[in-house]
Image (cartoon, rainbow, N blue to C red; front, side, top):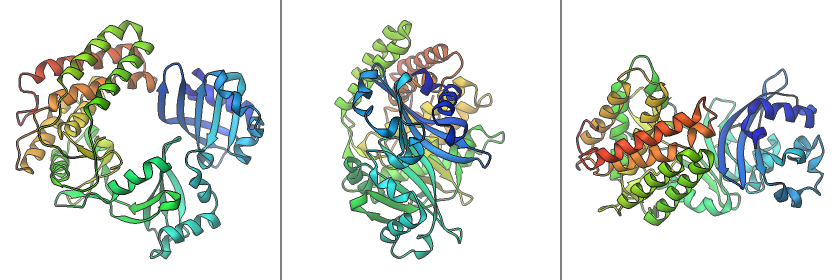
Length: 421
């Protein structure tokens, strides 16, 4: 597992195993970890002098799990380029290029310009300017999803999402569920191909809210607009969304607790007790509202007209709006703990977000913001290890302690006041 978690070690192994690829640098873009079973890492590799990029999935697993794959020619040194697969038997790692993902077979139709044009003609029949687009990978989640930017010769752009078969139905429903309204911008669906599990959407310009958070000059209005846009999303009543289930959330808490105890045994009891407290306070929302389900500053684009685009609606469902607010506040809290924000910025961000939300809704602030902030901080306690941060055990403990403090305060009105904390 050390090989896939250390970009430098990964590059060294890859240079020896597949010198034809000419890897120069690598960075981790996503990581999934199931202790004792596997570690799945998405890498973006920079190749050669021209800086061309290659997205690959690196899966470290138990040696016994590689046995079914060892008969393939994929163990040859040049196979990653030729077949899209390669086995590094000595370190129990399987590499898969983005265009050879077994769960996303439709990606093979995007490998070259002629095949891609055929797919895009079917996907976007009324947009001929996009048929010969360049296809740039934006985000690759091995065995789960891949998102591309389509760039036409005339400068037009679109987003192309590729789903596994079992996730396509929900992705298609959610892509069509919401509409732009006031401060809220939603990407318009442009086309889909059901047999290939592909969806194309409008490309929305804007500045990522994460950049606003850390900017030297704080743009309070952009954060307030984001709160207003989120309130507008929560006010919609789309058909077909899934419903949040308390049982699934409790199981997720147990899973996080177990992972934390595995990677940092001295924190095992603390994590287990905090998970139990969180689970005991989770309850079915009195009124279910449409929620994003994975809301953070990474999912928001703010434009020059003071509107906020909320993107990536694959996890949208009916549930407690405190979930979305707690998630983005937890992101702010973690950034503050890491020292990524100027002094006093955490409080100002939360105040602006909640004030903007409150100004755009006919309802009071959701009552469980504190609980959901603590819950999302607890889930983020895995991130310092996954991101290989310096002194990650201390940072993990700091996240658990902050989650406990916020959970303690939740019973005293956290989230019910306009100023948040």
